[in-house]
Image (cartoon, rainbow over all chains, first blue to last red; front, side, top):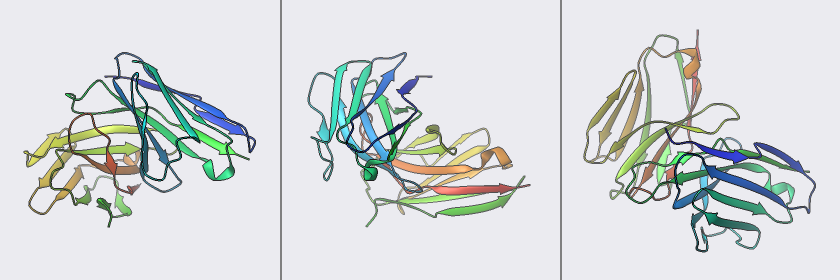
Length: 116
Length: 111
C-alpha cells in the first residue's frame, strides 16, 4: 500500500525556537496533504489542508503565521512551528491523498514535539 | 455538539468479540473509516465503508452501518491482546477531503 513518512519522529526543542516537520509520500504523488494535531488522549484535529503549489487552507483557530506549511512538490509537505512554546507540544500527524478520486488517505507515523 | 462520537473505553477478555460504536451527525458523509492507533504510533487504516453499504466484512473485522440512525460499529471477532489500542471512527464528505475524527475508543484486552 501507499506509504507516508514523517521526519523527525520525535523532537525536543527549547521555547522560542522553530521546528520543521517533513511529510513525504514515498510511492505516490500527493496532490493534497493534511496536517493534524493530536493532544494526549484526544482526537486528531485538522490544522490545515495543503495543496501542491498553492497556499495552505487553515482551520479556524489555527495561526497561519505560527504554523507555516509549504507544499512545494507532489511528494513533500513541511510544517514549521515557529517560535514554539510549551503549549505547542503535541503529536503532529500528516496524511496524503493521491487526489480527489481516491477513497482514502494515507497517514504518516506522526511526529512528537516537546517544547521545553 | 461533536460531529463524531464514540464511547471512550471498552474492556474485553481475550477470545471474546469486541464491538466499538460510533455515531455521526452529518448525513452527507460519504465515507466512514475505522483507524487503529497503538501507543506512540501513527494511524493504521483498518477498514472503511461507503455510505451506500450496510455491512462490510474483512477477516475478523465486521463493519455495520445504519445510515438512518447515523450509527457505525466495528466488531472484532476473537479479540486478541494485540488488538489493544485506540480505535478512531472518522467520516469524510467526499474522497480526498479531510477526515473528521471521533475522540477514540480505548480497547483493553485481558488474557
